Length: 480
Image (tube, rainbow, N blue to C red; front, side, top):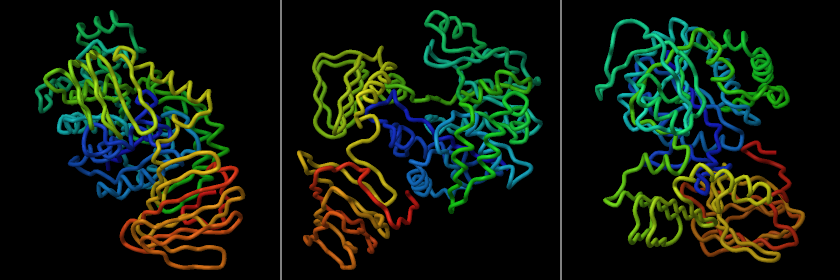
């Protein structure tokens, strides 16, 4: 069986302010009507003997990943939860241990959740040629046929071809696997230009295919401390439905390392399979612009936008009208709580803004104005001294935890749907235009007993309104 392994641990900081720590780029529908994670989840559909996907993500995103898989009719093999990111080598190791427990004859197809590959047929053609190589014990990486002298990617120098057959993709590109002569770090522009003209260099995609037992054997040879920590974390982990929580302390002792550095650059079993499918890692706003359809002035326009005398520019509006005049080679991204304006040549430096936000202990790098929770989401409407107003949306059948607050009172007004309210010893129902008041230190819970979404306006008042002023007594989502 072929097991799709979806690695969903990235934070996508260079796509700020759209991508944020609690809702990163893989969870966003950036280049199609599906999110990048959903694209990755369905990309291998049509390959023979395909198993259900296995996800590896952090604890914060577990319900979002599960919901997005459900939306594309995928029942996960499992969702492995990392208590903290340790890069791709430990994530793949947890996946390999999980699959090995269920299938001794497995082949893993390892895909980051945040890539965009529009030519799915060409992707599957490369994968199907890689299956026998992986089956015989090779560690296959997929190398992207370069189209520009890109300095934002690592490169793979092709060695000797493997076999004599030359298959072609649906687009006519040759598909011949090669030994790997070298892995090369991100080059400067002149070096990247030489690689492009040489014809025997490929972009390093970060996608792989291998048997789990071969990965574990090679990892044990080169990075035994990773496999030791992961085995302990997996063995001491707990199952919770589709979720597998690995043991936190054991996993935190695991070194931080990538698949390439840990094994691929050291092993003699590595090979590269070319892939020509329009691939993009959507790693920056300039690469987003490259991967998007453009108008007759070479602009990418999304949302409520009007441009005048503007060329080669990306403009995104998520909340209000954005108008530009006289721009060239710029990036303008508007969200309800932050606006980015940057030159396209400096798009890689957006991470510096995120680092500054962290240093100032601001929240704009973590969350959007709309914050997602297992029960639904809330959105800030207004805030001031000793008060804030939120709009809550509760999914059908969902409920907030039974909780209390030490520092704030809450007033709930139902604007749509039916609410079941627990307030102290009382349990009662509210419908549209009805309200209730929750005093400080009063246990309470909000539930949606109906089959339609519930919308509530919540007015908080008190001397402290932080999200950490929550004492939970019962929670169906097992949050602490």
